[in-house]
Amino acid sequence: MDRTDWPTPGPNEPVPAWDEYRQLREAVHDYLDHQPEDPAWDDIWRALAAIMGEYQRDAFVEAFGVDEPAETACIRRLITGDDCPHSPLDADSDPNEPPHSPPADDHATLWLDDGEPALYSMHVYPGNIERLDSTELPHNLWFDVFEFAAEWGLEVSVLPKSWYNLGSAIHVVFYPPERYR
Picture 1 (cartoon, rainbow, N blue to C red):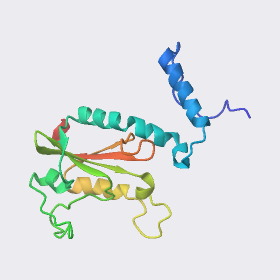
Picture 2: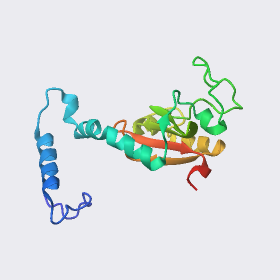
Picture 3: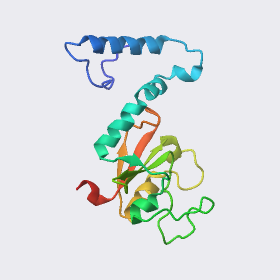
């Protein structure tokens, strides 16, 4: 089959390629051609996530200038600066106050800078947000995520590389507008 009219597969290989690049390319091809005992590990993205997760997390921490995670991921702390007042049984009891978590929240962390709330991050699966097979509204929670941010005065960054599950999850970050201006 002629593939000359197909979209580009991405960046071209480096010319000249160095030894480490060739070794990595060979290792990737070997991995793609193997049959693991556990079929879940047949997915190269799962393997890369396991290998690269710590690196991705540490690169995020450095890029966003945060120090450590808070004990509890409460987005209200980011919005108000106050401690988390939410009960685990009734996390969002007052509709006039910021809630405990944003829409589509999954695998969340409140990140601190010098002990103060700096940003809130969550690792979401596109299929959980873009619910195209849903028969009830909302079909697409991205609208809710951005409306939530606007309502509470936050900026949103959507990062394609999630250390939680590289290749499967997307990293969504909320932060006050003044943090990076």
